[in-house]
Image (cartoon, rainbow, N blue to C red; front, side, top):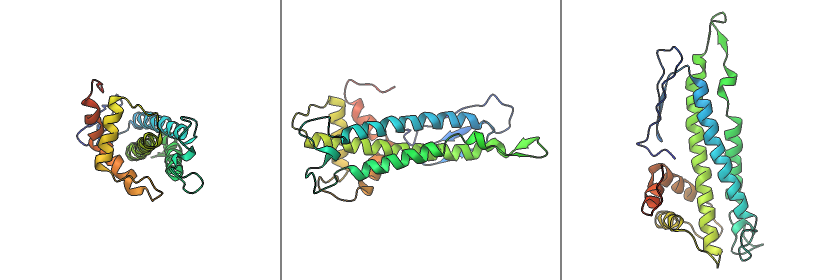
Amino acid sequence: MLPPEHSYHRDSALPSEHTLCILRARSTLSQTSAHSQYDTLANVITKLGSISESRTRQLLDGEESSDVAAFLTARPGAESGMMIAQYTAAGLLAESIADSSISAHSITVLAGQEDIHSMGTIATRALRQQIEKSRYILAIELLCAIRWYQLASDRSPSDPLMNVIDCIEESVNFPQEDTQLSDTIAATAKLIAEGSLEEAVAQTDVRLE
């Protein structure tokens, strides 16, 4: 999602001397009155996180394959597998939903003539946080998909997915036994931010527009 060199530019149709938002993976610069634009984009990003979390939940329910245990654990009853990671994804999604619609909280000042920058800077900051949270949610889904393929005997991933799995396994320490996964999730999210996984997919016939 949005590698560092990618910028999102949107000029507002509203009368304002500050109408440009530049959004990057590592920095956000904004001063604008078009807060609803950023709310809209944040809602789209949150929806993407919701879809990803739903797929993670399906991978963990134990119904995708008869030989893969629930929670993607290699030792059912003795290990938690990816259960805690899914808790993390669900928590990040809940935060994203709670932080949406900044434009609904605009506060009027100057005898009703203005509000506080139309909440533009706040909405932009929230948008950056939504992107970061959704990136982590996507990272958790990818790790769960890798764990599923590690455990499934009848696995047959597509070429693009196999390239993504290989890219992550080459760059990220992802042990099969129970362990804390915060560093693993962060490293996978970094690969998403850097565009490494897009490059892995681009090596196949699939083209990402």
